[in-house]
Image 1 (tube, one colour):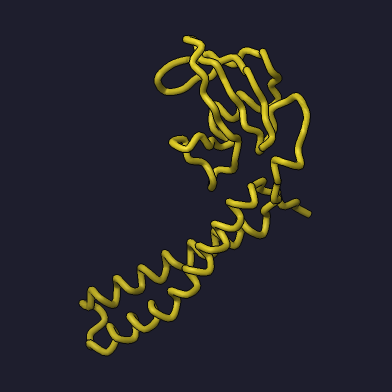
Image 2: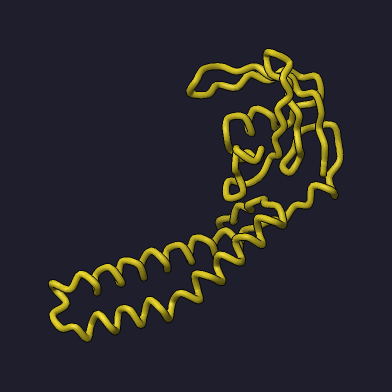
Length: 158
């Protein structure tokens, strides 16, 4: 029997996905109404409104299915419950770049990642390079712009 791979995520990410699922499910009746209204206009083969509404319905249902799958595999992790001296999912890591400029990242799930807010996926090149590292360890990351080198200066669980 196949095992279902758990998907780690923070509580905030879980709640955001739950809210998005609720919003999408609330759209269902509106889409059905749009389909019914478009059907009333007659010939469906040349009815752009009907085809657009059906396409919107398909996209909505696919997104609902995707989110339900993620939520069913979710393993909620609270960084405050974690400790240790290694970088793990949920940790906030301060790195020093080659110019000793500090950069701070929190390791999160793919759905929660937002590099502009300092949240990177554990599956990203930097995230994969950081997992398991300790303070004062050097990290080499290959990114499209070239290789980058960092030193882990601090690991926090906040």
